Length: 541
Ligand SMILES: Cc1cc2nc3c(=O)[nH]c(=O)nc-3n(C[C@H](O)[C@H](O)[C@H](O)COP(=O)(O)OP(=O)(O)OC[C@H]3O[C@@H](n4cnc5c(N)ncnc54)[C@H](O)[C@@H]3O)c2cc1C
Ligand code: SF4
Image (cartoon, rainbow, N blue to C red):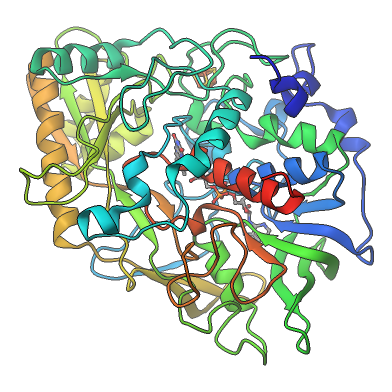
């Protein structure tokens, strides 16, 4: 991949001695004083925040990314154990409401440098061109103020930097990947076999997992603990794909720094910096610009918690847009039992997928669609799947001891954005005394129809592959939206460059800005949007 090292040296800055962290780089990183007026302070060092930090640092900006969680060291902080990995999640209290409330905790956001990608599954598809104009095409969702073509070069750049491995992708905007596809495990073989029998196209990849060697990052060893934080450094997360380069180029990554407010000059209406808590002390980081990238729940919460006399209903909320249009994908999971051993844990959980049902099919009574992927739950998650079917006691034990015979597929259904699905502030306070987020969520008829259709296809695939029993549970995945991008301040919070309509030196660069979600996992798109914003800021767009 010519040129990738010239753009982002992270993989070469990691150690080559069997350890996972460049401690020298962290020890010697530049440290700004709170009183320094730095060029940009970023709230959150996950998918969106870290890409912005790395790009701006490369352009010579004085930039600091503050993250509420720790600066992880994969060698000492992570374990290949489901129960022992709970500390990776954002588990501060949140209140859930609505007719279909979304459980919070392990299946949504992370904390600490690297953000939710530390424990994401590693699947990195692009959005389809149709995702950017669903309102015009289908009368549902929203049109983005930018098109797929605006993001295409950023998709290609980030795919090289992670890097992504997969077969040539025939759906959406057909494209290839920088690394060849990984070999497929038992679960992937089941999917390919069943889909093949039904004439459904399924492909291997795309995963942001090293297939070969990339800089000083080693090849995946197919141990299946991607959702617990990859101790091998084979799976991409910003902790290893963007933070090392950002540090080497003079960015400061300030961990354990919980931002409590974006501070506004009440006279000019411009952002002055952020208030944050660190080591039990309240502090203020001055900055010329502020970017918020705290994830779809925490970003709207921070804006609402930053109300002031100039913005009495919350920052950027003069038109009651903050927190609205929050989306979650419907993610039913169907498992099938086979006489032969499948051993679905022996590979990255997502390895094979189909986007054949992604687009609106005029023959159906619903709009938009769904994707199907292998998911391969580890034993505790498998127990949750079985228990959700009502199996308990000796029946649950029986299913658990039969674990190696099961295969599992998951769908991502494009649930539509609704204004009532939103984050507001609750009366309950967190350990810092700040109002917690209240997230209300209800499904629509189109959403329910998609889940039904996706479940039927997954069951057909597993039966066609030879399963004698199939069981399905309903669940959710991936939150995006809540501070969406739009053509005007009456319809969203930021413009096409992620600049807030209300405060000219305030940007939002995380998944909150997505107006639609497609049936694709969102991390690659979040990174691509942040990279585009960085180009806009540095004047190279
Ligand atoms: C179990 C799981 C599996 C997933 N699998 C996939 C997958 O396979 N493919 C995919 O594309 N996506 C996947 N995702 C989703 C993906 O990880 C997220 O969509 C993406 O990381 C969101 O990026 P972000 O920048 O919006 O936020 P994040 O990456 O979550 O970063 C937000 C950061 O902000 C910090 N923060 C929040 N509030 C504050 C504050 N007030 N002050 C300071 N710091 C703050 C947090 O600590 C966090 O580090 C998965 C998610 C989960 C939970
Ligand atoms: S399967 Fe590969 S990417 Fe996943 S945790 Fe293991 S080594 Fe890392």
